[in-house]
Image (cartoon, rainbow, N blue to C red; front, side, top):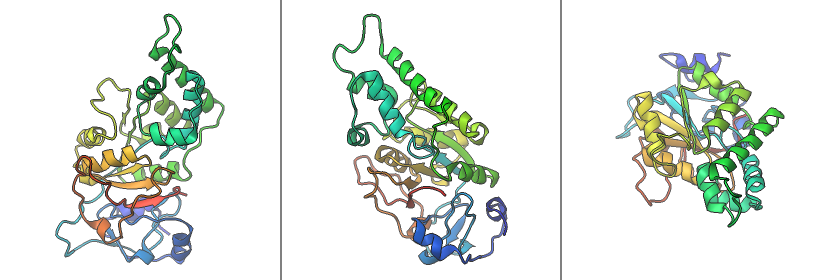
Length: 299
């Protein structure tokens, strides 16, 4: 069977049905999205556009749709890092706990820390008297980064299953990819090197970049990513796990694929037919819009 890049790189696609589709649909939540200018078939035959699975169900070109505002083709995939591309949240939780000298519970980390910039987390949880004479927040952040680097060096970096292969397939198919994260640039660059993905992304937007004007949940990070790519936000799909990240992407006008976690498991998923429509940017303070999909992983 043709590989994913061959399929979605063609000017004209033919509907193709895989015998494996029903079984795969039962195994995991599947994408109900429009990608690469393609509309998906009925929900029971929606393809699982996941690493190493190729296009495994009916897929046909969108054309002559009666929908008033069909979504434009997807030309870029914008990836959150922690909890989306990599399952690194617990490593960060433990490293912050060690440096702060305060145990941050898993529930507290989920509720108060996921999706926030490292400096914001450190400042919000710094105990009185924690800083030694002459010591600064920057010193603590460097120590925390060293702990994360030790984790990578020990070979314990855990990519979300299938994520690395999916990034490579989308890239080979002609989609542009970028990382949009509230995390530290140093952490992300070291992790991407360990995963062999340094060349897979056009750029990284990180929470500690000097020119990072705003952090998630503000829409600026995703608006800036689309601007750098020379694309409209509606031409990009975001991969996110945190509620702040989802709000940021939707506020910028992107469609979002969620990676399931404790924080987002209650998010609504759009029906397949709705996923082919263009989304309006989420208004500040409004409830989150339905996701294109909510997946456990990409394998």
